[in-house]
Image 1 (cartoon, one colour):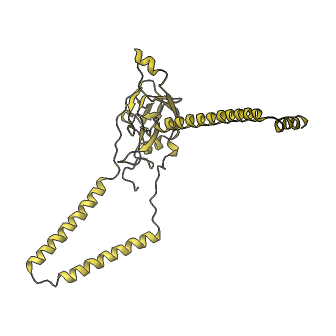
Image 2 (image 1 turned 180 degrees about the vertical axis):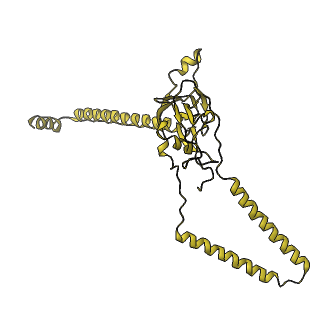
Image 3 (image 1 turned 135 degrees about the vertical axis):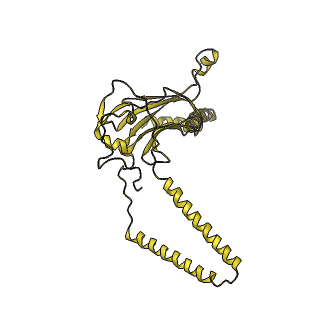
Length: 290
């Protein structure tokens, strides 16, 4: 405290030159602090811009659009720039049963065939392949793996193997890694039940009665016509409406679950497991209610 009082006494009795020097040094210190702050803010903004504009590649499982139990493996670029040289690495590679080569109730387990590398994925572009059916996998139970962990590695610009251009891009080429967890247990349950409450049933019956009342009202008014051509026009209109309803029901039936599995390559020296036959109580049901 004594040293502080002495310095304050010296400054209070000092001349204008001393105060000018103090002001200059204070301005220098404040300028340095401002430069450091601005530099950090600019660096942070550049990092945020690079993070926002860089590619983001993810691998995930997705049900097939035509059949809910058929699962596809998808690799998609969610970023705003293209991703190059995409590679996959798994601790335990994804496996699939070779159902087309089943014999004597036994089926072989093989690795899912994946490309060694994807050259490029544009923003929003994806690569996908049919993996397996959750119904068929459920039948195998613990005889096949259900969880697979790995990584996806990709880059923000193409790699040049030779030449001066490769030397210039070597420092600017950035690599990214995304963790991948493919777990069949995270998908929707295989045994899906369509529940309908009493309120839904009452509403459906009410709509049926309303439809019947509307049809009867229409018939009451239409039957009062006396011209034959009007009757023929009304009959044709009712016939067209009936055909439209019939076609809509037929299309709905055709859109029922279908087997879209693709044949897979067979690998030698793979473990075999027993496949439950379709005649069992837990067999495959392609036409079950969804």
